[in-house]
Length: 82
Image 1 (spheres, rainbow, N blue to C red):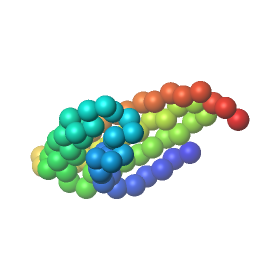
Image 2: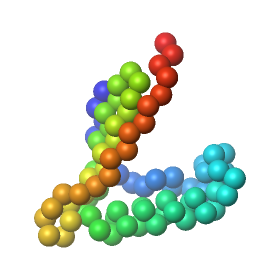
Image 3: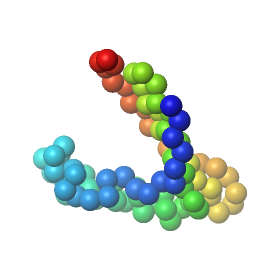
Image 4: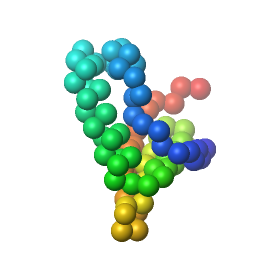
């Protein structure tokens, strides 16, 4: 499956991270810095998600001011349980 959308941000609120991290404030600060960097450095940041049975590949790509394309690649693997 392929999903294409405009990238908004990682973890838009602190409450979500409280369920996953003991020090959610510090984690939120890290992701907030990354969000600000992506939106400040690139124009129209896009996200492409390729989902397979046991893998998900996420590409977050934007255009730099000089016209080059750059971004992040995130890969996750999980157990398939039908």
